[in-house]
Length: 400
Image 1 (cartoon, rainbow, N blue to C red):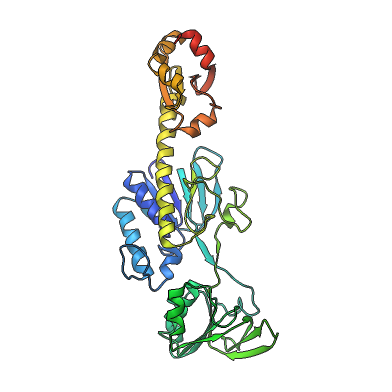
Image 2: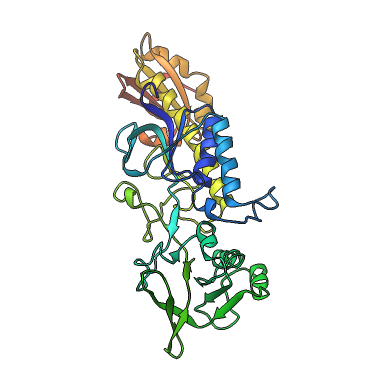
């Protein structure tokens, strides 16, 4: 950037971030996406997608490549960097990465989530040596071998069936009683009919062992407490995710699990900062809901920039005094005075400018200056409020 400041910086290049980039760039905002890995995030690790509208069947990497290509087509730029800190105190939002610093007028946070680590004995020690969290990434390494899957939700069962394309046998360890899974019915039906899937019920993984590489796991039956050893060459965990929001602690509101708290417009308590996707507090985490979040966040950011830039130019940086008239279509009195507010401006003094603000459309600016009841007029000079004209005062100046 010539001036060093982007209109919008998006942290994270998953479905939410790429959709936000598409919408922001298409609105002709100078848009940058900062992603530490390949574009697509967790979605790019999914082998088969069947529930994205308009796409009958597609791989995660293929769909995410389309997302990225479309965002670039409209002018968004993508860079690879890992963000480690943010500063949200000034008018420009500053995000700091390992490779550089990026400044933005509006910031959209889409850091996504990462696989949950259970902390089972041997889990960390054998990571990359037989322990994996991504079937799409590593399934090919287990051709004609036996592997274990931990988890019983949709993602776990779908990934287990994908692993079965390569592995000789896939054993799924399930904490529930026989025949009970957390996966949806259609996925359960496919899984129970699959010839290469085996099941260990009422059980949890206790330990992973081996000499350099994974060779076996210890499984505990939660009813009897009995331990059993199961030979295996690989262990795949699909037990949910945790948000990648560690770099935001102390800067933004997070819930007890570390998810970002937002409003309906994906807005955070900090003006001009939005959050979208799997790192946001929400009910359903799917590609389509992440994309929806990203679109909403980008549109909200565009509106924020229009309001803020216009107010800054017309009011805060104006060379002459400016009278700002706050009104609402729900207030009959403020509507009546729209036609005579120019007389008030003239009465205030020569050379005074006039800006009219609908509080229903610019609630953030109204709240910033304590605008409650309307009509209300504020006189600005040098970027500061020098006079406040409430309804009673306006009635004295220009009677109804």
